[in-house]
Image 1 (cartoon, rainbow, N blue to C red):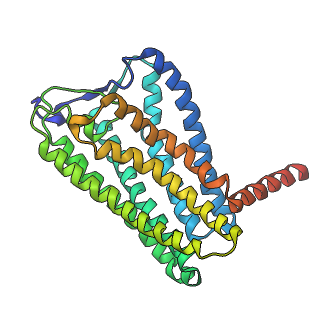
Image 2: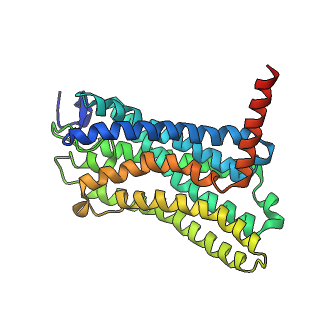
Length: 315
């Protein structure tokens, strides 16, 4: 078989953190705990949003989408990473690598767009409160969420095809813990300037257009909040919007480093830890950021706990 064609590989070796065996043991325990917290937190958000009628609003519809995204995104990389951290076999089949790149990239792009949509929802709620129900109609919410998923996975399809069309010339060791575009392009035995330029251009669109929408939305929100005479009202708005801005800063900050960094300045070791941050840390903290200061969600949690207690006492 012609090894100049990436499809001839039976698999890849994910080097991950294999050069630091002591770090692997620590990472296994930490990431396992983080992954379990991610599953618990995001599953709880989805369940509460469907069980409590007070949470069946556009804001929590999008938050449920975000939680589902984070569940899938983390699951696309972390279980395999945990297996590799505990064993000597670091291999991944060619098909699994293609699938992992497509799924992780699709979910990551979808989250970029969805965070922009969520900023528009907050803008409509704060700046157009009387027209909010009309603007954020359930059909429009479903359409915007669907568009986010479609654009995200359309881009993932394009990037996956272009990445695996690059000849690898027998090189199959990926200096990363999962299949991601920048480290895969480093395996190429040809000039990848065109691929890197295309990736940079698309990343600018996927990342910076939502950032522009978020900046515009929050600029208008700040102006509207400053007109509110009630200090309690200002705190409530800033509390809700502050949660979203925190999530945005965590996600976009790390993603911009990973995909808008010039390749000659890209540190592979730092890139791994940055990727760890947006694949496991951000999805884990999102539910806590959105719920700890959210009276609606905490009220829903108390209702569920009281219901469970009453059911136990009845038995």
